[in-house]
Image (cartoon, rainbow, N blue to C red; front, side, top):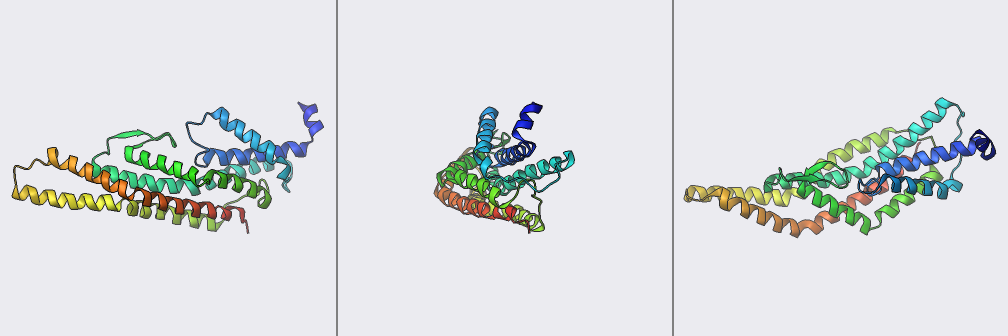
Length: 258
């Protein structure tokens, strides 16, 4: 192994290591690439292929080649993937928030399934919305845009020289607050209609005490909520697409280390 390293060169080995770390961090946290249903062996093979493909575009960072400096450069690359993935995951979390609100008013809170994207248990409406959002993400070639971001990062941001700036933290705080706002906005048609249905059912129970809310009311609420959700589903996906494109555009903030 030592003879192989001596033949290839120390600089090339460090360059390959940092490039492999950057792509591993991005593949580990980006939507679709980090999907739990994709086997780890496939992810590793994709990272290795991309590393060999992009190796000629990479340049060696201007650092001291010590163990501490290389370790800091590796941590910097992992942090780049984590923050870049967080930019995009927040948009998917917006739909999860909306799905939780819709599931609550429909009485589906206990109907939880395993989300195939995150591998966690979530309400069934949230899982449906995030799965449709992933299909929309692939439909407008969002995965191609992420690969282009990987290539552009090698041209603009040297390996091992990423650090989070004040602007990045400010954007993340704003994105998290907008996640709750957009989650409420997307779920408002169903939540508002459910509130109206509760008022109507309350008036019926006052005028007709024999009216059984559990037997008649809840199936009606579920049916009406499904109809309204199907009516606004395209608008919800359109909002998701706009927010995702904006998040991908804001990824350029990570490359500006001024």
